[in-house]
Length: 229
Image (tube, rainbow, N blue to C red):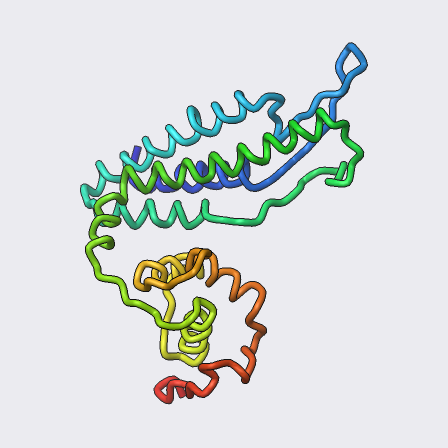
């Protein structure tokens, strides 16, 4: 398999994994006994769903990543490839794809099974990201751990506002997604708080910062970068 073929197959594989773990397609099918059973993303049991994701798609994904490495023999390129895969698989929202809708009057047994499928989706998402990180990015994690963190003396929300202002006003250029940006900041700063900095940054930008950002913020006095004019 050529490098181009492997990368193409990776894109298909990752898209399929993401669809299985993010979309929640629910169908109710009657059996011969007159009872209904749940079909979740075309799977009738938790075991078959988990096996398909891990023993089929994830194993294939690792094989394709290794094929790319054998073609390039470049660990840094492999790490970048894996980081791009993790970025695709890092999501918080789930979508219901069903004519039934989530308000369907399911029985208690059906509701419990649907909930178990939904929990399994989240579990598999975390497991796959952790396995990719452990297998291909462990050295990068060790190197980041050796970097002394900066201590932020204010609140997490204030730090989020500062970097939002710097980004909006042209002092910072972000390459990649917001998720990778948040992870980079979380790796640099030690900030007190019961919620992780990464989670707080996501929450700040999702809920608390209108566009344009409020002029009443602590760092609203920051002026636009004149070099961008």
